[in-house]
Each structure stands twice: as C-alpha cells, then as structure tokens.
Length: 183
Image (cartoon, rainbow, N blue to C red; front, side, top):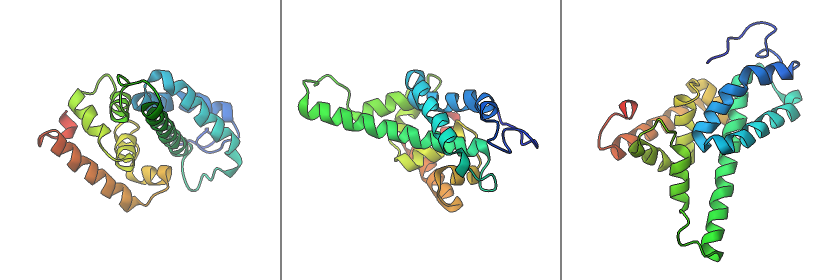
C-alpha cells in the first residue's frame, strides 16, 4: 500500500499526527514484523511513532515524505533491537549455562525470515551485512525507491545502488546462482 501525496493529507504535514498514525501504522507494522517477527514488531512500531511524534517539529517535508521518514526511523530501531539482542546473547554465552541457546546468527536468521520466505533465502539474507540487508529489505518489503531508501537511511543514492548490487550478488551466490527474485 503506497500512500498518495495529496494536499492536506498526512503526507503534507505532521499537524494531524493521529491521521499520520492511522495512515501508516499498518504499513510500518508489516515491514517491521517481516524483519523482527510480530511479537517484537508491536514494541518497535510503537517506538517508531513515539519517536516521530517527539521529532515532529524537526520533520522537513522538502527532504522526505512522511512515509519515507517513518521507514527510516523504523529501520534504525530494528537495527537497535538486533544489536541489543546480539549483545544479550553474547553475554549469555559468556556467563550463562546456555549451550543450547541459539547463537546470534541463528537468531538473526529466524528474525529475518518471514513465513513466506524459503529457508535458503532467509539464511542468505541473514548473512548480509546490516547496511546491505536494510537496503534490500526496504526495497523488497516496503517498496521504497532508491531515492527514498537513501533519505530513510541517510546515505547517498549511489550507496543504495552499490549496497543493493552487492546484496543481490551475495544472495545469488548463496542460492547457488539462482535468481533471488524467484526464490
């Protein structure tokens, strides 16, 4: 679902924040749930809109659409969530009894894989670096353009292209030469 930019709509201004929430909650939730799973998505999406509300005075509609801005906030919070979990898992490995606890790689693979993804593709996506994974998933799951991804992540348009190219190459190699778009 792509929101159309209409004068007076939530896309134009954050003055109607409840309207922004209503317009984009489900879309942002689907994206985060595909990245982290539904259980963690609720908290991350709530944090996304809370952060957007707190930063609403700094939002610049000439720089990004509300939708793109929200995806940027959500992606940053997904990364923060993952880093926190990896630190906790490493601490458990150092100090806890957990020989049967999954390692960070397995947790990331579980989180990244949506039920609709095949296991080989999920594993290949989990093996990507965070920057490559963020670009790929913002394009594939959120349907953002290269320019919107650049704005959402605060990187250049060229960096989006190069990360996406590297991600596709790595996915193709991990899938034995198969086209990742058909996996």
